[in-house]
Image 1 (cartoon, rainbow, N blue to C red):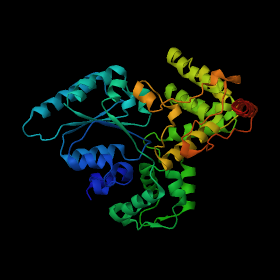
Image 2 (image 1 turned 180 degrees about the vertical axis):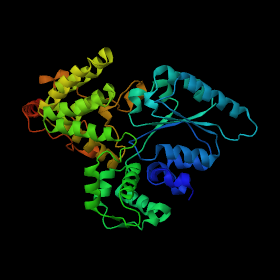
Image 3 (image 1 turned 45 degrees about the horizontal axis):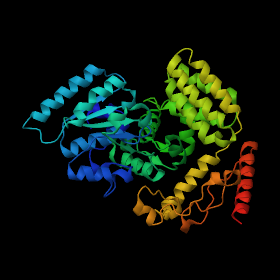
Image 4 (image 1 turned 30 degrees about the horizontal axis):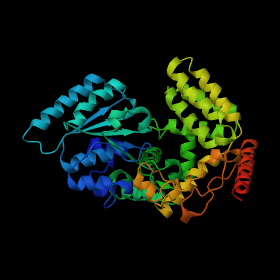
Length: 434
């Protein structure tokens, strides 16, 4: 091992260089999976990788370029401007014209969601005409921050946190292949705390190993167990957050404080994010999701409040934006809670995945043509407004499904009222059919 490698972070020393060494994301990289098929064919389409830190976005882009032998260019949206984009695209054009380059150049843009509209616009022509294959990486939902024309030209693939089994694979590989770890005779007694603190993040796990190694005197054996990991990270909780992942821990604390109905804690974590330079849109977006997921039908005004807050911070910016953020956080924290809508859609999705494409009942189908009408499309549909209370009892689910229940009202006055009103409608609807 040379001196450069021995001083590089463990995560960099162990970065995989081939498809076979890549750990995780089997839904994309397993045999027959979509990205693996592209690599095997050598024809790479533009796409955006969306997922949390440390799950292999940058590594995957590098492996793809290396495997298909494509020129590889990288830009970080944090410190690149329109001029940087144009300069790289000019080099890509030169590669595309070169007789010595057999694969289309790949441009990897990290944190692509941080590019503004003009920067993203400057990519469009090159992506559309095939000058470059774009691979973007983002920790944010691309539909919020990536312009629609660019999204239409690039498929979005979601990357997941690594499972404990995948973290174990990574740990085994580190212990077997890294000379520095081997020289310290590292032993592992237990991994529960190690995997819990890593939280599905490969880089974080390797950084924790780095921390434990650095804290051990030369010549002393490192024995990894839950107590050692917990004690080390409690003494220096940010030591393994070398790439800014700590903000995910803080946003987690913020969400959980609101979910736990503690407005003071919510405002504290909000202040930590503001002082840390967090983007206000990131905070507001999380509150919009929280309002639907954790408050939902118990207080529908919460979603209106959160969405309004998101709009307001676009208009006022900093420092005034801290005030509507605080107002919204306190409102959400003190609101009555319910996750019934969240549970309902997940239950319905699970049902759909297990039952497949059940046919739409004929009376619910659209009949824009005479042929469809003759086939019974829309026949015997009962128009609810023609019945008392604007409600009539008829089959809305596929006939083979019967009537499964997905929504269970939460224990709160708003949803109990909705449930009672629904029951009254069903009773009246049943009576009107008699």
